[in-house]
Length: 119
Length: 111
Image (cartoon, rainbow over all chains, first blue to last red; front, side):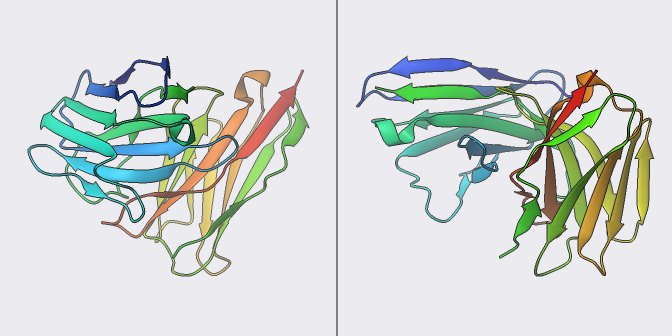
């Protein structure tokens, strides 16, 4: 149980393109989803916390107009990287919690990530 | 802010031995500490969660300890297997705050 599906797994596109990444919880309802970014051999850096039906909460230094997050249903959150540039190239990973409560007292279920390469 | 230290050098051990990975943190003591496994090009997979009032947690061949005095957690894999080779991430939370992840330690188990 607690499967999170992330799509696409790999994207290569030209600079200036907008890219949408989907994160779906397949067998549970995710009231909260998280979006992370990971550079090689670095830790996961939280970009934003997404709650169903409300605006996402972005971490300091993350441009909300650059990284648009939508969490319209209990099973789907999307991250759109607008006008992507080479410096946006990274590994983007989503995760979801299947229970209410504090962020740290429940495990997070991760998708398999999206490798984004901007040429 | 919380700083998490995990050994950046890969840990190489032989099959059958016990692997011990370390997670040290500074500043405040977290209410919860979690361990994840991450394979190359994949998302992390949850392994164990331990609370600040727990000293030890076990799950099959895995054992986690939590020493709030030393500000340290140890993650043990007994009878290690080549399939255990992966990067292991430590993550901390104060409760209702979000998780903060360490950089992880790569474990290589040779047959």
